Length: 77
Image (cartoon, rainbow, N blue to C red):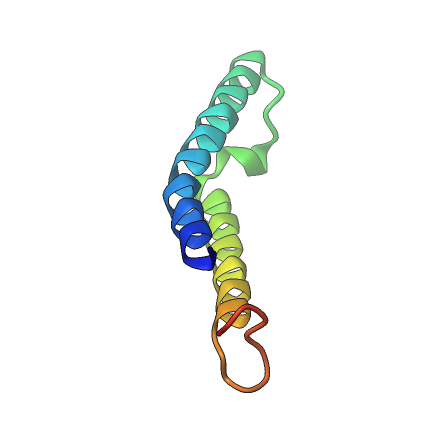
């Protein structure tokens, strides 16, 4: 069951991420056209840094929950 759930999450995650990105891009475009977009949101490197930090945190959490190193591995067999 754990393996099936992990595969489903890994397959669904890119799809969900794409739709979230498309939604955010549409909102950003609407704000840019309206002139209400803050300056810091117009910089792509800011969003790249935020996404990289979020991916690193998620990766560490997944490793902690799935690896059995004697101190973590809540779901390790």
